[in-house]
Image (cartoon, rainbow, N blue to C red; front, side):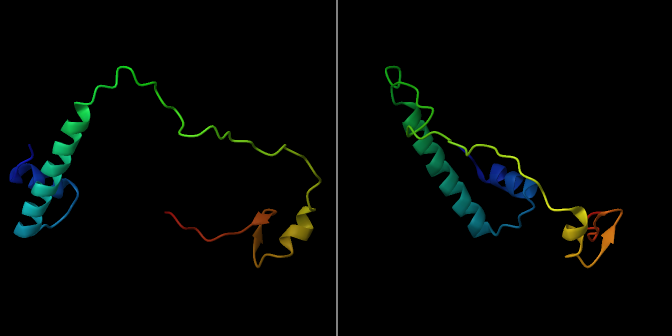
Length: 94
């Protein structure tokens, strides 16, 4: 059972500012959810075969093929800026 103190602790970890009503609502919702999990835990699954996939579909990938690429000069003529033979892009991360 989750109490108000634990909800406030979780909200602090998540950097959430919850009102009193929201805290009470989350407490009720999470306890309801945990109650449902307890019901599911009581189901006897000893005779149930483990399911790895819900269907028989396989991940059929296309055959890999190699072909000649465009010359670097032709590709770079479509860019506004080029540096050291490559596309020059803006720095996004410091």
